[in-house]
Image (cartoon, rainbow, N blue to C red; front, top):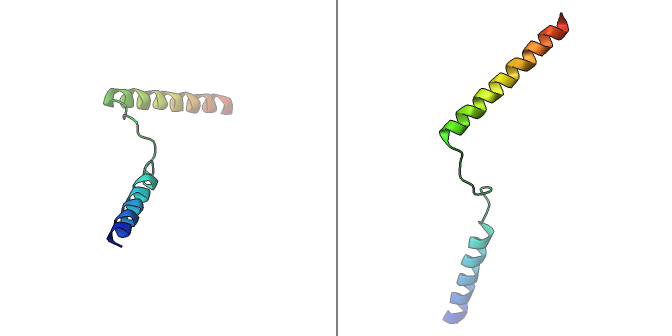
Length: 59
């Protein structure tokens, strides 16, 4: 009886452990701080270019 309970508890723990894998999303290394700043600068430049294009189209 004790052997069956151990086996059941082990199987339960193993199944919970396996189902928890990947629940937080993909595991990857976050980009460096400099990369983040460069991306932010590029996005700002793109937004400014879009705004300038929209303003020139209005005129």
